[in-house]
Length: 67
View (cartoon, rainbow, N blue to C red):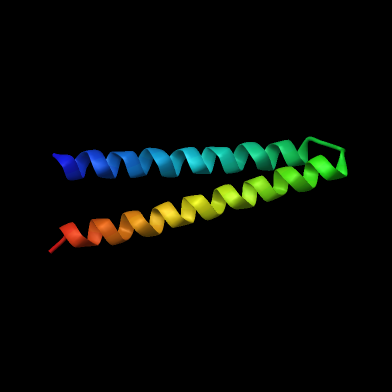
């Protein structure tokens, strides 16, 4: 049961990071201010890094339970 909760938490976190990346990407596309655009693009990139890190960790943990 605990592993199911852990996997669910990872799935939610991955989804939230993806949503945040999309949000910042759209914000960057919708602003004309160069400084704000650069900041939003950086934020989107950071969120994608978080998403990838969570996915990699999820896969490693999941592999431990698949035997």
